[in-house]
Image 1 (tube, rainbow, N blue to C red):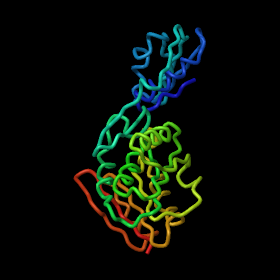
Image 2: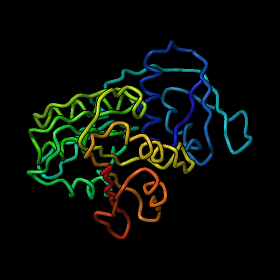
Image 3: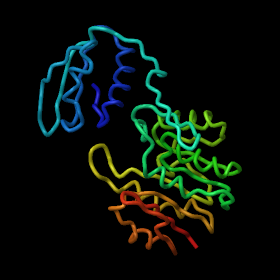
Image 4: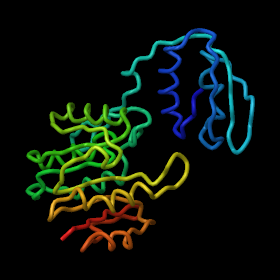
Length: 258
Protein backbone atom coordinates (compact mmCIF):
# COMPACT_ATOMS: atom_id res chain seq x y z
CA UNK A 1 0.00 0.00 0.00
CA UNK A 2 1.45 3.37 -1.04
CA UNK A 3 0.03 6.76 -0.04
CA UNK A 4 0.45 9.23 -2.88
CA UNK A 5 2.03 12.54 -1.72
CA UNK A 6 1.11 15.99 -3.02
CA UNK A 7 4.28 16.26 -5.14
CA UNK A 8 4.41 14.07 -8.27
CA UNK A 9 8.21 14.17 -8.46
CA UNK A 10 8.38 12.87 -4.90
CA UNK A 11 5.87 10.15 -5.74
CA UNK A 12 7.90 9.01 -8.75
CA UNK A 13 11.10 9.03 -6.68
CA UNK A 14 9.61 6.96 -3.87
CA UNK A 15 7.60 4.59 -6.05
CA UNK A 16 10.51 3.75 -8.36
CA UNK A 17 12.59 2.91 -5.30
CA UNK A 18 9.73 0.80 -3.93
CA UNK A 19 9.14 -1.34 -7.00
CA UNK A 20 12.87 -1.97 -7.42
CA UNK A 21 12.63 -4.09 -4.25
CA UNK A 22 9.43 -5.98 -5.11
CA UNK A 23 8.90 -9.27 -6.90
CA UNK A 24 6.99 -9.64 -10.16
CA UNK A 25 3.22 -10.12 -9.56
CA UNK A 26 3.32 -8.25 -6.24
CA UNK A 27 -0.07 -6.64 -5.72
CA UNK A 28 0.16 -2.90 -5.14
CA UNK A 29 -2.45 -0.46 -3.86
CA UNK A 30 -2.04 3.29 -4.32
CA UNK A 31 -4.31 5.79 -2.58
CA UNK A 32 -4.28 9.58 -2.49
CA UNK A 33 -6.21 12.82 -2.55
CA UNK A 34 -7.66 13.53 -5.97
CA UNK A 35 -6.08 17.03 -5.84
CA UNK A 36 -2.58 15.59 -5.50
CA UNK A 37 -2.06 14.49 -9.10
CA UNK A 38 -2.85 10.84 -8.42
CA UNK A 39 -5.12 10.76 -11.48
CA UNK A 40 -1.99 10.45 -13.63
CA UNK A 41 -0.60 7.43 -11.80
CA UNK A 42 -1.71 4.86 -14.42
CA UNK A 43 0.05 6.73 -17.19
CA UNK A 44 3.19 7.46 -15.14
CA UNK A 45 3.91 3.84 -14.26
CA UNK A 46 2.29 1.89 -17.12
CA UNK A 47 5.68 0.47 -18.11
CA UNK A 48 5.91 -1.46 -14.82
CA UNK A 49 2.37 -1.93 -13.56
CA UNK A 50 -1.15 -1.90 -15.01
CA UNK A 51 -3.34 0.00 -12.55
CA UNK A 52 -7.12 0.09 -12.25
CA UNK A 53 -9.16 2.60 -10.30
CA UNK A 54 -11.13 0.49 -7.85
CA UNK A 55 -12.68 3.06 -5.52
CA UNK A 56 -13.41 6.76 -5.25
CA UNK A 57 -14.72 8.34 -2.05
CA UNK A 58 -14.12 11.25 0.35
CA UNK A 59 -12.09 13.17 -2.26
CA UNK A 60 -9.63 10.27 -2.59
CA UNK A 61 -8.91 7.64 -5.23
CA UNK A 62 -7.74 4.06 -4.77
CA UNK A 63 -5.85 2.21 -7.51
CA UNK A 64 -4.61 -1.38 -7.56
CA UNK A 65 -2.55 -3.55 -9.85
CA UNK A 66 0.14 -6.22 -10.13
CA UNK A 67 3.78 -5.48 -10.82
CA UNK A 68 4.70 -6.75 -14.29
CA UNK A 69 8.25 -5.47 -14.61
CA UNK A 70 10.97 -4.54 -12.11
CA UNK A 71 13.35 -1.64 -12.48
CA UNK A 72 16.75 -0.65 -11.18
CA UNK A 73 16.80 2.39 -8.94
CA UNK A 74 19.73 4.80 -9.14
CA UNK A 75 19.70 7.65 -6.65
CA UNK A 76 22.00 9.76 -8.82
CA UNK A 77 19.30 9.97 -11.50
CA UNK A 78 17.13 12.10 -9.21
CA UNK A 79 19.58 14.69 -7.91
CA UNK A 80 19.11 18.36 -8.74
CA UNK A 81 21.89 20.90 -8.31
CA UNK A 82 21.10 24.61 -8.04
CA UNK A 83 23.70 27.37 -7.99
CA UNK A 84 23.22 30.61 -6.05
CA UNK A 85 26.00 33.11 -5.26
CA UNK A 86 28.54 30.47 -6.25
CA UNK A 87 27.05 28.01 -3.75
CA UNK A 88 26.04 24.51 -4.88
CA UNK A 89 22.69 23.34 -3.50
CA UNK A 90 21.90 19.61 -3.73
CA UNK A 91 18.35 18.32 -3.63
CA UNK A 92 16.12 15.28 -4.16
CA UNK A 93 12.37 15.01 -4.81
CA UNK A 94 10.24 15.63 -1.74
CA UNK A 95 12.73 18.07 -0.23
CA UNK A 96 11.64 21.70 -0.08
CA UNK A 97 13.42 23.61 -2.84
CA UNK A 98 13.84 20.62 -5.14
CA UNK A 99 12.77 22.34 -8.35
CA UNK A 100 14.14 25.78 -7.55
CA UNK A 101 15.52 27.73 -4.61
CA UNK A 102 12.58 29.30 -2.82
CA UNK A 103 12.34 33.09 -3.07
CA UNK A 104 11.54 33.33 0.64
CA UNK A 105 14.72 31.43 1.49
CA UNK A 106 16.70 33.78 -0.75
CA UNK A 107 15.20 36.77 1.05
CA UNK A 108 16.16 35.36 4.44
CA UNK A 109 19.65 34.54 3.16
CA UNK A 110 20.06 38.16 2.02
CA UNK A 111 19.87 39.29 5.66
CA UNK A 112 23.08 37.48 6.66
CA UNK A 113 26.12 39.77 6.78
CA UNK A 114 29.82 39.32 7.61
CA UNK A 115 31.11 40.30 11.06
CA UNK A 116 27.78 39.51 12.74
CA UNK A 117 28.12 38.23 16.30
CA UNK A 118 26.55 34.81 15.84
CA UNK A 119 28.75 31.96 16.97
CA UNK A 120 26.25 29.11 17.31
CA UNK A 121 23.35 28.93 14.85
CA UNK A 122 20.42 26.54 14.52
CA UNK A 123 18.73 25.99 11.14
CA UNK A 124 15.26 24.51 11.71
CA UNK A 125 13.81 22.54 8.80
CA UNK A 126 17.11 22.66 6.92
CA UNK A 127 15.80 20.98 3.75
CA UNK A 128 18.49 21.23 1.09
CA UNK A 129 20.87 23.04 3.45
CA UNK A 130 20.54 26.29 1.50
CA UNK A 131 20.18 28.58 4.53
CA UNK A 132 23.00 26.88 6.40
CA UNK A 133 25.56 27.30 3.61
CA UNK A 134 24.34 30.85 3.01
CA UNK A 135 25.18 31.64 6.64
CA UNK A 136 28.51 29.83 6.51
CA UNK A 137 29.41 31.66 3.32
CA UNK A 138 29.40 35.00 5.18
CA UNK A 139 30.18 33.68 8.68
CA UNK A 140 32.67 30.86 8.06
CA UNK A 141 33.68 30.67 11.72
CA UNK A 142 30.16 30.08 13.00
CA UNK A 143 28.99 26.66 14.19
CA UNK A 144 25.77 25.66 12.42
CA UNK A 145 23.45 22.85 13.46
CA UNK A 146 21.01 21.71 10.77
CA UNK A 147 17.85 19.88 11.83
CA UNK A 148 15.00 18.24 9.97
CA UNK A 149 12.77 15.21 10.55
CA UNK A 150 13.06 14.13 6.90
CA UNK A 151 16.02 11.80 6.34
CA UNK A 152 16.14 12.66 2.63
CA UNK A 153 16.43 16.35 3.53
CA UNK A 154 19.25 15.59 5.96
CA UNK A 155 21.05 13.64 3.23
CA UNK A 156 20.71 16.62 0.87
CA UNK A 157 21.90 19.05 3.55
CA UNK A 158 25.02 16.98 4.13
CA UNK A 159 25.70 16.86 0.39
CA UNK A 160 25.23 20.62 0.14
CA UNK A 161 27.69 21.18 2.99
CA UNK A 162 30.21 18.83 1.38
CA UNK A 163 29.81 20.40 -2.06
CA UNK A 164 30.74 23.80 -0.65
CA UNK A 165 33.49 22.55 1.66
CA UNK A 166 31.62 23.62 4.79
CA UNK A 167 31.13 21.75 8.03
CA UNK A 168 27.94 21.57 10.05
CA UNK A 169 26.20 19.24 12.48
CA UNK A 170 23.31 17.52 10.70
CA UNK A 171 20.76 16.20 13.19
CA UNK A 172 17.48 14.37 12.78
CA UNK A 173 15.05 16.18 15.04
CA UNK A 174 11.34 16.93 15.12
CA UNK A 175 11.76 20.65 15.71
CA UNK A 176 13.59 20.85 19.06
CA UNK A 177 13.06 17.23 20.13
CA UNK A 178 16.73 16.27 19.74
CA UNK A 179 18.31 19.62 20.62
CA UNK A 180 20.03 20.00 23.99
CA UNK A 181 21.89 23.31 23.90
CA UNK A 182 21.27 27.01 23.28
CA UNK A 183 22.10 29.19 20.28
CA UNK A 184 22.89 32.78 19.41
CA UNK A 185 20.62 32.64 16.36
CA UNK A 186 17.79 30.39 15.23
CA UNK A 187 16.79 30.62 11.55
CA UNK A 188 13.99 28.98 9.62
CA UNK A 189 11.82 29.05 6.53
CA UNK A 190 8.99 27.11 8.17
CA UNK A 191 6.26 25.33 6.22
CA UNK A 192 2.65 26.41 6.57
CA UNK A 193 1.20 23.35 4.84
CA UNK A 194 0.55 19.87 6.18
CA UNK A 195 0.21 17.86 2.99
CA UNK A 196 -2.49 19.82 1.11
CA UNK A 197 -3.89 21.74 4.09
CA UNK A 198 -2.72 25.03 5.60
CA UNK A 199 -1.35 24.44 9.09
CA UNK A 200 0.37 27.02 11.31
CA UNK A 201 1.25 24.62 14.13
CA UNK A 202 4.89 24.26 13.11
CA UNK A 203 5.72 27.96 12.97
CA UNK A 204 3.87 28.55 16.24
CA UNK A 205 5.88 25.79 17.93
CA UNK A 206 9.11 27.20 16.52
CA UNK A 207 8.29 30.63 17.96
CA UNK A 208 7.00 29.66 21.41
CA UNK A 209 9.72 27.07 22.12
CA UNK A 210 12.63 29.02 20.65
CA UNK A 211 13.13 30.96 23.89
CA UNK A 212 14.17 27.69 25.57
CA UNK A 213 16.95 27.23 23.01
CA UNK A 214 18.21 30.80 22.66
CA UNK A 215 21.00 32.33 24.71
CA UNK A 216 20.27 35.39 26.83
CA UNK A 217 20.85 37.78 23.94
CA UNK A 218 19.68 35.32 21.29
CA UNK A 219 17.66 36.04 18.17
CA UNK A 220 14.98 34.23 16.18
CA UNK A 221 14.85 35.08 12.48
CA UNK A 222 12.38 33.48 10.08
CA UNK A 223 10.71 34.16 6.75
CA UNK A 224 6.99 33.86 6.05
CA UNK A 225 4.48 34.71 3.39
CA UNK A 226 3.61 38.39 3.68
CA UNK A 227 -0.10 37.66 4.01
CA UNK A 228 0.47 36.00 7.42
CA UNK A 229 0.89 38.09 10.56
CA UNK A 230 2.72 36.73 13.62
CA UNK A 231 2.78 39.89 15.71
CA UNK A 232 0.46 38.59 18.41
CA UNK A 233 2.36 35.39 19.09
CA UNK A 234 5.75 37.11 18.90
CA UNK A 235 4.59 39.76 21.36
CA UNK A 236 3.68 36.98 23.78
CA UNK A 237 7.16 35.41 23.85
CA UNK A 238 9.65 38.13 22.87
CA UNK A 239 10.51 41.52 24.35
CA UNK A 240 11.06 43.07 20.95
CA UNK A 241 10.60 42.10 17.34
CA UNK A 242 10.28 43.68 13.91
CA UNK A 243 9.96 42.92 10.23
CA UNK A 244 13.55 43.15 9.05
CA UNK A 245 12.85 43.14 5.31
CA UNK A 246 9.90 42.45 3.04
CA UNK A 247 8.91 42.10 -0.60
CA UNK A 248 5.54 41.93 -2.28
CA UNK A 249 5.38 38.24 -1.34
CA UNK A 250 7.58 37.53 1.70
CA UNK A 251 8.73 39.11 4.94
CA UNK A 252 11.50 38.30 7.40
CA UNK A 253 10.78 38.59 11.11
CA UNK A 254 13.52 39.31 13.62
CA UNK A 255 12.79 38.70 17.32
CA UNK A 256 14.95 39.19 20.42
CA UNK A 257 14.63 37.76 23.92
CA UNK A 258 16.18 40.87 25.52
